[in-house]
Image 1 (cartoon, rainbow over the protein chains, first blue to last red):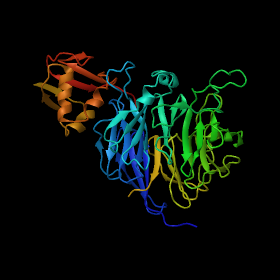
Image 2 (image 1 turned 120 degrees about the horizontal axis):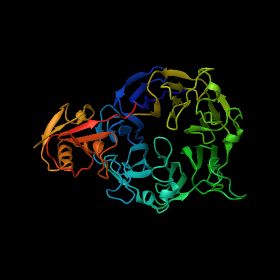
Image 3 (image 1 turned 30 degrees about the vertical axis):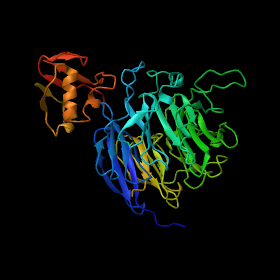
Image 4 (image 1 turned 45 degrees about the horizontal axis):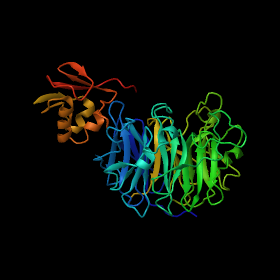
Length: 381
Length: 85
């Protein structure tokens, strides 16, 4: 049964600026933008703890990064006073090229935020994003350079630290994803870290002898934990779709093997249902041959599981049925808190698609935007 | 005082002004003086290791300089070079 939903605010971060789409009923949308016009916008996140503080990670082609902050849910902006930076004069000589990922901290720690950067690093703010400090337990860990495979030789557009997760039961339990490098866990608020990749394939590395696995070096594209069952994590990796139930075993299970073979289980985003730990959504892309990274066969589709990955349902009602070669990047699919849940995605070709029935049907609510880097559904105060 | 010419990319920090005058004996000191007047400017031009950003070029009296220790012998011009689409 459908019940009224509060205002839905979609932030759409693109290669040329930030746009908002606002709706009171999730059917009609009002566009607001561009903000930060001409800037590359990597991620925009509204703080769910106050519904007003918003951070937006930008840079331009010429200039260095600018982390922007709003205290009125994106209506006005100022550049933060002390953005994430590596220590001046450090031996590795790292400099932040851009902030790639933003995560609000634990509900018991208002004002705490985390940021993941390129080159790869983790940073923390304790004043609502105005001033940032490096998380040295990660950035300066003696193995970190090996984990991130060097500061220079990286994925296109630089290595990315992403999928920073905070366990809702314990603010000291943190996770992060490295592209490339793998997925890591900290039980002590970032002071120490250990890899958490057992069971995940690494097709881009030579096979090891039977029974051996690489502990790190993987390429998680996006990882989410379920807020109501935080021991359950969902992972869309460069090498498949996985589920982890830490209360059972610290070993990932490749639930993507249950997706249709002709579609495969390669993709960027993965989204959980806010109230249903067994429900998740992926957007597969073509990871065959030379890795075109388009919708397989030019036919875009979301796939949904309602049984923890045992079976998947193709959801393509409303999408083009042929010759649609876009894809959806790792921060570009987002769920709202409504009932039924709304699902939103932004494409590499600048379209925003919305579903108000948990993916059964999609409507295009915007087209002709620049290449989309992130979509976030939020509820402003 | 040194005259500093700014590209369009940086004029959001100066209220639209294309140039300003600040004190300083080196390029680093001049840029720091601009930062003092217009906070947020410096990180866009120079990284935390004191390297000029890759697509920013700095000229002193018409000569390109590559380090912040370059002495000031005349006007400073900051140019945003080609950076792709």
